[in-house]
Length: 119
Length: 107
Image 1 (cartoon, rainbow over the protein chains, first blue to last red):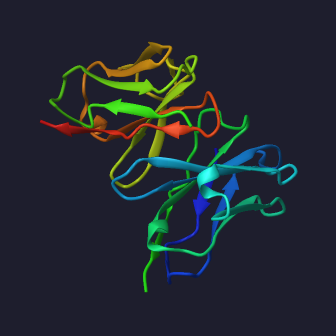
Image 2 (cartoon, rainbow over the protein chains, first blue to last red):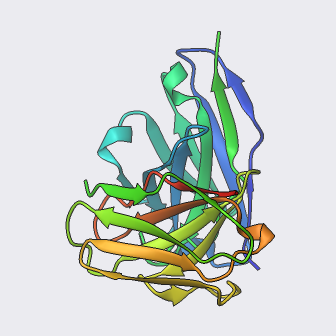
């Protein structure tokens, strides 16, 4: 079955960067898309962007361009998201979710990674 | 971006009760509307896709309907495990967007 294991919680200082990971199994990673989401505790879910693992092609929500950079390592079936120039507004839980058809139903979700930005 | 407006934001209800959550899109989304449940531990589970199709493994007490800009999720008879947050989400156009959520609470 599809399994998604996200990296552990991060405490980072303002201005720093952080790289989150989403290790996958149970499906064909190289022909699938991976989307990433942001959820501030108590708030709704925002789509950050997605990457096609086959060729590394990406699409971003305009709001997150320059903030998030998505990459993949097909050899380990792992997706990554770099978040740069962190501010307190980036403190949130970040989720990954694979799809086979771009932005169709997000049927599988990682457990989320809590990022706390604090000095 | 398409804005998704969910109501109510909070819904107190009792076990066995029938409840309905509404979701309105800022423009027509041609039934490209999905529903998710989120538990307090953060776990997100898909319930309904393309307005009315039940995701595999989801109990039949969940149903969805709607068209154009207006959609709804109905739970026919609440079970203890149904008390959670619910979100609608459109995938008609980029970027996919979510409603603000409905907290289904025990009355």
